[in-house]
Length: 165
Image 1: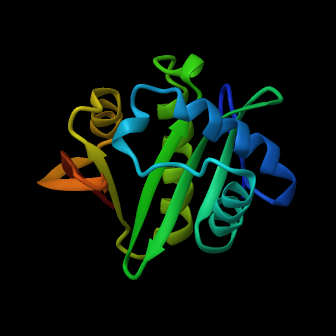
Image 2: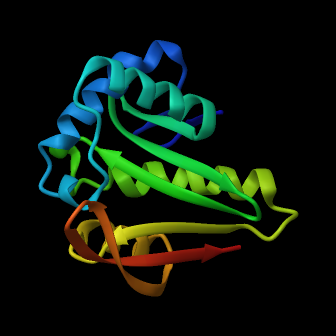
């Protein structure tokens, strides 16, 4: 899949995108919002396993501004629904790129599966306000709130969002 938006180029990731993916995760670790996600791999072997796991089991899309990967959007098929996730470089937060890129991937999903009822889910930490605002802007509705834990001994409030077409 390849998508061109007004400002972005989006493509399904392949082996050649490892360096860009690695740089994305390194940048994301410095984000104040990374604490709301499962810990990312720290060493090269773990990162390679993480990357190839994404290629094999998750549809992972690189979001490019000119020649720079500025984010990724992931889509995980799960029976009769899809789970969506995203991660963008810090310096591109608050500029509308996450909305533009994620919306384009969602529209592509709807186009591909339009004859079926499409249900897209997303989980987010309630304290990750930019992410909750993005999901609201994309038309998702908060369906439930629950305690979640990605790190042993640390529990946060998470929200489960749903978008149906």
